[in-house]
Length: 270
Picture 1 (cartoon, rainbow, N blue to C red):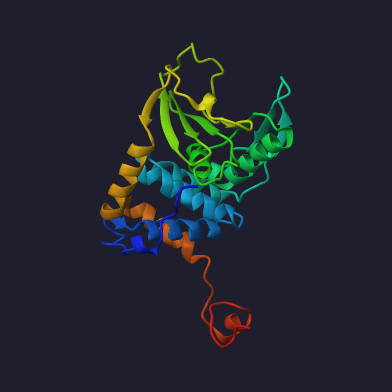
Picture 2: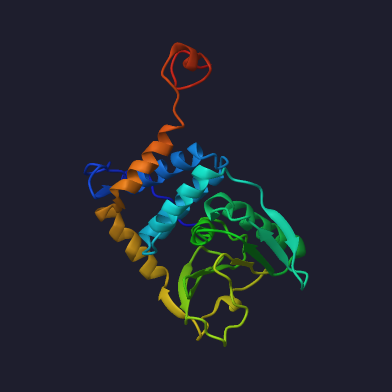
């Protein structure tokens, strides 16, 4: 399981959120995203995993900020809803998100796939359909222990198909397929994600596929992440202001009554 960024990386925001760009530390970015998701009614636990997913993707060279902005707009208009479970024509498992952003459903979808793989002691393939901002499923998978199994998330970014492979020890690889290559088969729609959890045993099925181009192996992913530690995360000022506004909605007025009900800390807490 990849190590989470810790307090050692926190340096605070540099700049003014009203300006064009704001530079923030790993810790500040993740915590602000988590509070914003919580303010938008993303369930406890999923808010933490989703905020880490955004961070994991962004610091490893994938644009997570553009889909994050779209996800915030969607959640602001409609709170998260449970996934629908339907069967595929071939007996496979299909989950339907109903147009929700993946930040609010990725955790449940991956849990479903992993549970099915463990229960059947075989490889599990699950399609998550009707989902927006599908890239966050990959970021969520990156923080999950593999239970001794290989795992994979495949999604579409415009005309390009992307894939994240994870070994049981957490080693990861990002790959891209040629646009609409007919040799690949099993094409994905724009709002569909394929989650694959391998069966028990080795990692043979994770070997490199010549039809896919490796964009970043484990060494390159870590190099990008370490670069961002010292340079911070460059966030558009308008997006940062929105995140802070949603995060602020988790606060309550600092009154005696609110403290007696458990807000904050101090002598009023048991």
